[in-house]
Length: 364
Image (tube, rainbow, N blue to C red; front, side, top):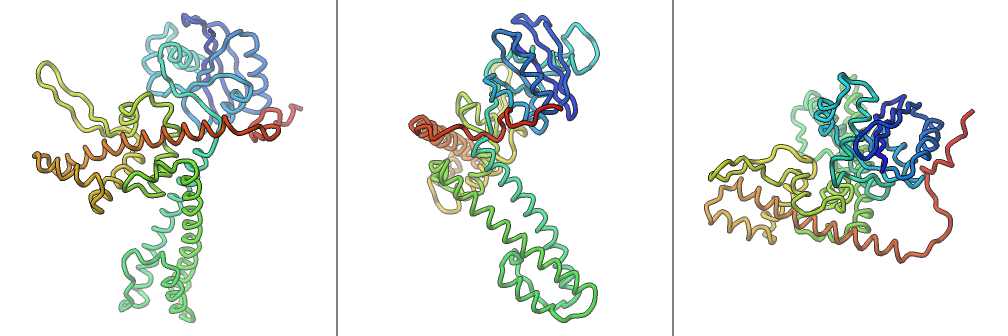
């Protein structure tokens, strides 16, 4: 087995091939362009059995990963935190692109169960839409804060209810209220209200689209009590496939709901994890709070913990971990169902792949 490590940059990719004991075999540096990707595929043909490892910088390597996957290569991702120790233990001192690429390859030799790259699918679409909606909401919130001060300056007696600057009716009434008022303040306020209305429409459209996508791909996840469309979309997009986790405990470590052991000798203790994916952690927290509020199954477990002497914070953390396990089981069930559906579906024609290397323009 030959392992090829890739150190990716915006303009250049450096590849280092090592054998099964970590000895460097070959080095290649190419431009991060379509012609460079074709050169990489030709260079890899000299090795009989190849595994490609890339540093986990998906904004730089996503297109390269797609081209490698389309060519039939197996691609694994190496997290950057695993490379520092490997560079320090290397025989060649310093830091360079070949040193980094060799470190990526040696980590791939050493570590088992590294995340495997896959071609973009519905889960990436969910993540992109969820992130875009979050950006639009942040932009709208800033505009809402600004327009409230302008409205107060124009009319101190005007009362705008809290969290109401997302209702079409109220926005239209405020725009009509400011119509005809002279001055730059009123003009800016009208412009902001128009922008808020437009952003609200776009945010609602994205939420409806996310609801359709998640309902089709992960219906079991939506059945988890307290789990809404936005929380489910956030979990689906950030997880990028529950299959890459070997157990619910691994998933809990990924999302930060698994405690960290800090014990020695006979004093067995753990402490709260401050790491993990905080967006998934936030979605799990909101599901836990919702279960307690509506009296769902989690509220019984929460009350039992409180009766046993746990504080409210401790009980909420334990409930969040319990929901994490439930979410993992639901996602695995949904992904198994999707895989079975793909396997049973007949081929309808040639594969339509936007990332196919053959679609790239030939080098001049």
